[in-house]
Length: 290
Ligand SMILES: NC(=O)c1ccc[n+]([C@@H]2O[C@H](COP(=O)([O-])OP(=O)(O)OC[C@H]3O[C@@H](n4cnc5c(N)ncnc54)[C@H](OP(=O)(O)O)[C@@H]3O)[C@@H](O)[C@H]2O)c1
Image 1 (spheres, rainbow, N blue to C red):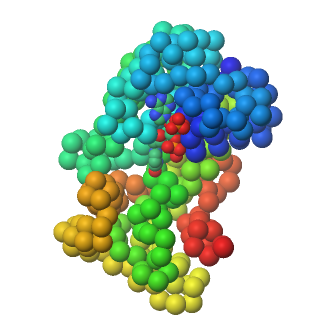
Image 2: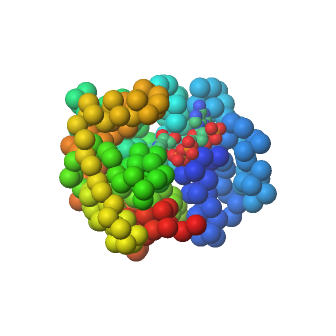
């Protein structure tokens, strides 16, 4: 039995769809959900639905019984997910899970000096807990989703240009769907015991590279400005963006500038057996396909 948590979210649901596409029977896949109204499609596909919450230890132990491979999708509640994921790992061990797979986060700086330490901390702690648990593990170090870029850059970059304090550093962002496919490939093949994979693109792109792609495709000049953190913060807050978002965007921009997401790995390409989706194809789909 394979169990996927976060099954009503983007990554979990896409991973289950890839498992089904690969011919895994729906009755050998269980989905941990907390809201059945979001799981009608999974139910229609014949996937076993189990209700559980990372905050409710007993519900996790119950759901994880009889599971051979558990894909623990990291939680979305940033303030509380450290404790939540600790619950999940300890529950997995208590329930007798054989192999735990965890969607962690790509990074270089594990210390408090990282501009995204607040995001990274729960991942670092969960990885350590998993490794100390004695269960067989596989850790996916997911690079920043390409899918998140429009949130940072805005929907109107073709009119406004790119305004983001990430400097000239190149990063290996990857498409969430590619990550889901790679994870499904790992769940359905052997040889991934106690391995860590960087789910990063094979190509690295800077914000200027993205502006160049957009310029070429639109036949007009799309500029890229990398302001100082102070100018960026004051411009966004004057435009009415809530401070918590401004701080988060500025933190990610600084992490990109410091090379936290620069990739030198081919794990994603190897696991997919093809090149990951390129930045060109992603930008074309987001900004040019109506
Ligand atoms: N690499 C990146 O760029 C990046 C970007 C964003 C997030 N992430 C991380 O990757 C994870 C997966 O990404 P995604 O796009 O699939 O996120 P998502 O669509 O927000 O899905 C998160 C899933 O976690 C579930 N969840 C949250 N809190 C839970 C709890 N207390 N108990 C049980 N389930 C809980 C959610 O359940 P509901 O459907 O009931 O809400 C949802 O199914 C995120 O949760 C986050 O940790 C990575």
